[in-house]
Amino acid sequence: MGTNSQSPNPENIRMIYNQMCTSYHSVDDFRAKLLGFLPLVSGTAIYSLIKDGSGTHYVHEIAWLGVLVTFGLLIYGLKGIQKCTFYIASGKTIEEHMLQDTSFKGQFMMLTDGRKLMSKFFTEPVASAIVYAAVLSAWVYVATTKMVKDQDGVDVLNGNFELAGSISLLAFALVIVHWKILSKPKGK
Picture 1 (tube, one colour):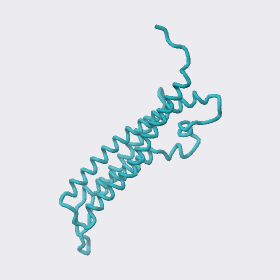
Picture 2 (cartoon, helix red, strand yellow):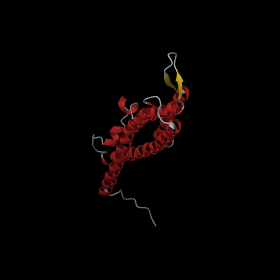
Picture 3 (cartoon, one colour):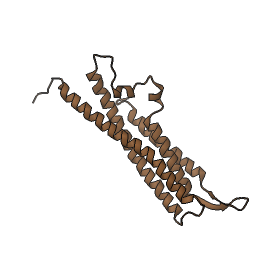
Picture 4 (cartoon, helix red, strand yellow):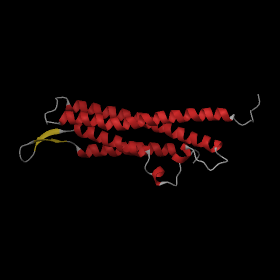
């Protein structure tokens, strides 16, 4: 059986490109909603647990559950970053093929235009890293809290800020390193 030396049918390429755009926007839309709701729901839950200082008897257990759920969503978010990175790279390749005789740039080419500051530093993975790090840090802080009396005898929450900060930095680094590994051109 010989190889097919004909170029792909332009209509098939256009159909694949349209499906890729739909898939990319679906994943990106879900990730945006998740990044919006995660801090809102976590913040509401944390506030409910500690609002009057008495909370529930299960504050630590609920907070550690919050840590685990947030970490699970972080892993799921990393998969979303991987999918979006694939869609962007593949979409850019298709756009370069479809638009080779024009100066027009498609949506994926615009996303990877390295001349713009926004496309280099202020990206969805960086935003994800900030949100996941902040939410994990908040849950870890609450999970490690103890009720103590301040110098005036008032009950105050005292959590392990160092551990919360360390977890926050690790989560941020995990997202950024994962994204940078995915963004590295193949063969380099």
